[in-house]
Length: 104
Figure 1 (cartoon, rainbow, N blue to C red):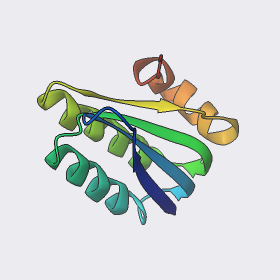
Figure 2: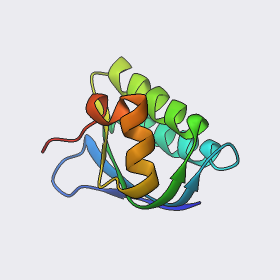
Figure 3: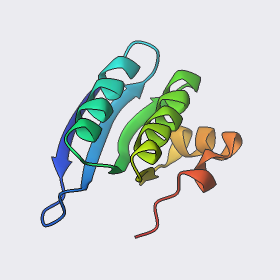
């Protein structure tokens, strides 16, 4: 999985994380590290853009929930946006599409 982290301009607490490829057991550590680093720099509002994510398994879902918990510990949140196809279905079946839904 390849991803980039792009902070939003004008807001030092918000960042967008764009994911591409597959979020599974082998790639979750990369996202965990990115979330930890962002929260460590004071960014406690994370928008995870899933437009280019083709696959997500249960370890990926758990990573998103852990990320939200980590952000909540410092007064923030993690939300997902642009999910479609398989990833949208997995989020819907798990109920996380409502829980982690991004509403600008």
